Amino acid sequence: MDLETWPVKTRDVRNRHMDSTVWDRFALRDGDVVVASYAKSGTTWVQQIAGQLVHGAAPDLPISTLSPWLDYRLTPPETLQRLEAQAHRRILKTHLPLDALRFSPRARYIYVARDGRDVAMSLHHHHLSGNALWYERLNAGPAGLGAPVGPPDPDPGRYFRAWLDGDGAPFWPYFENVRTWWAARTLPNVLFVHFNALKRDLEGEIRRIAAFLDIPIRGGELPAVLDHCSFGYMKAHAELVAPLGGAIFAGGAAEFIHRGENGRWRSVLTDGDIAAYEARALAELGPECAAWLASGLPSPSATASPRA
Image (cartoon, rainbow, N blue to C red):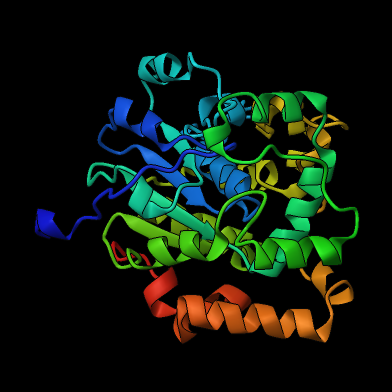
């Protein structure tokens, strides 16, 4: 593949949550794994899977520190030094749109997606769980980062409508994030994974991710990997997977691993809300991407690894 075909960074994203410029100070190595997504799409789940594959099904793996959200403004400043000191294959996390990320042919990128209605329901709980420390640290910094983040509307339906009408507010644009990554779905070092597929066939998705990363699953390891990547295990070990160990959540780390469910929006949203979302998804993403995002059903151009 000619180098001209690789994605090129065209802008920076700096807001209350993220600062894309940190990637300009970070050198990717051959084989580094970057787990990318819009928030609450299954990112931590895929980080856990990648961590289990890289580290041979190790129990009690502190994935939140081994695999930091690099562009998060709340990530400790010493994180770059810690990553540089890692001698093993590194796993990183980003929530940036692709056009704000320095893309490298040396790395492997796994993009995790989830229906926006499920994302919004999960974001609502996430926002409700933020504690005083979270608000204090998010709202520190110059006014140019955007309006301060305040407590959410307690009504999930109104929250969804504000999120949709406000283009992801008070977080960041959702459809833009999906769209920029979808454009790169056929690159040989990009793999698309859907939250629904993880729910439907965890073993199959783990095998697919392992093949993409060129990591053989050694004899006897698969049951342990499956166990360590289960919702129950991750909930019981939430302090190992939650950002900053769960210190920014009112209920602690367990609030970050909430239910892992889809479809809660069905009892919350009106027919008008659903129609508005579906029309927006179609207009923003096109029919193939919108259909895949809504269902998670196999789509050759989204879910089949080009390396397979």
